[in-house]
Length: 320
Image (tube, rainbow, N blue to C red; front, side):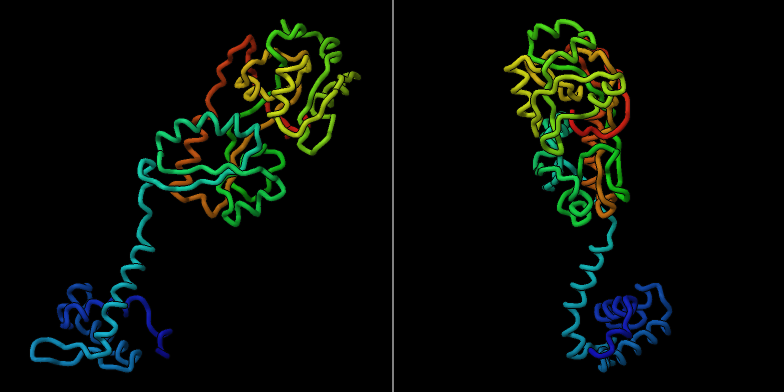
């Protein structure tokens, strides 16, 4: 139809009602319009379609062959449009079949996702959760393109323009194997520096992190004997050797077989955040899972050891 751009939605709605009622007066009543207004719209429709569409009959009006062809496609199109613009239905986790994709490093998996997972499976049993590798350099693009729904990262270093919710403030504690001879109590600073330390290097192969920066300000240094890329390997090292590590407290408290004590120096902690893009910000299911995760991982830490958590916020961790 060459004159499609001359039609608007109101004309198509009028045509749908006219084809159903086959009477201008009754159509006007249904549309809450005057009869002359409907007659004017019918004239525009006839011009646009180059067809009478409705012709006088003994009772009311009779559709032309062209109008009969239009009836079902027009009805389906208007119903589809109605569904598209209808208000979003409330999200029902019990019935949802959503697949959420989140990016998290192994620390965030343990400190954020694990506390939320069991309850999530009960509340939304038909949903799925895909945890993918967290690559900060890809964060903004992956969120913008819908490749992932949520990214867990420190507040410092997160790209501008993303929605952000701070989940908790993390701090560092000193950890080693259960029964470690030098961790029966809080060590002195000299004892701390004399121990062999293992660090997780996010950048790969680094031996210096926030702990070393804090020591350097006091003119001191520790013995960093091992650098590893992931916390999983670090936990095995701590469990099977006499090495120690400065660990994020939420990770250390969840690890079996570790002794956790206060460090003899204060090392700046960091703020852990959940990040997402504007494209998913108002999605009902997305809002629900954000609230679910935030409510569980943001709970106060329950200590199983003789430490008193006092949280602080500072820069992003690099090498621990």
